[in-house]
Image 1 (cartoon, rainbow, N blue to C red):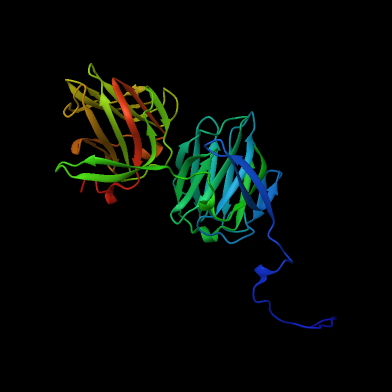
Image 2 (cartoon, rainbow, N blue to C red):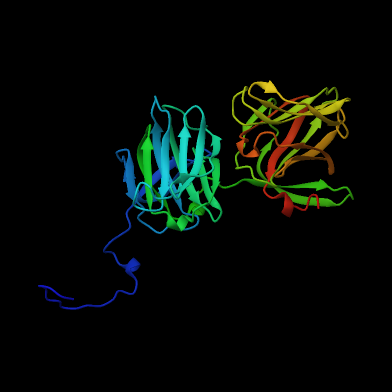
Length: 363
């Protein structure tokens, strides 16, 4: 030490965290959970009503299961807004995660590295609406970022740049922010506990097989329209269990890319009882080339269980433990957002298999 100062004592503090000098700033927040019960949690290093565009340094070390929390309102004339996770202090530095809702269109997901934008991915724009409030969490997982908006999983984006390099956050665009900050451990929150149920089916050799279904929906009224609550990845599967009506003529299962009736259909599955099963896609307002499969094993009045397995090449459909048909991707499966079911059928349960390869169902 040098200079115009006298020093009484120098030494080391073993654990700064146990001292009361500089307490980590926290603020309590209360939001309504999916079951309408208020949920309270603490936000670390909160920033209230920042002027936009905003650029700020990350005040803590980013680790797995931490989350960025944000509460705000989309402007009534909004076109878009941006959330960018920068790796450095300059505008031209790499962006580990670029999140850009384009109101009325879609949400753009990307990264920026070595002066260039990389391959853009997308998610449905819902639930961002011009003039509407929202709250969201960006959760850091070992594989990537999981984004939850208004209590529902919105999208995922795999790491392209190590999250440990994230040093600044940028906010800009047609949005006002009430507060943003950090959640120390997202897993401890009660917001997004993934619902699961255990089911049992009979295999081809008459052996009972138990498996878990995530995000189950029981006995939905038809016609049914439901948001896909999880990011679709290869080797996931959709599970359906139901019964055909005794006078059934047909039923439809459609995997849409958006919530509107006129949106594209990545996979149209339409068993026509007594005839055949129609397979198709719908794009830019037009049906594409129809394919078909035998109607067996669908029979009027009979029960069935079925899996749509998402593979890198297409959809594999299994009915009552037998492979029924395949349909190659014409529209990227990452764009799936909505399931629609209608026709002469009753559904007992719908749900998701997280990893078909590790499932005991069809070895």
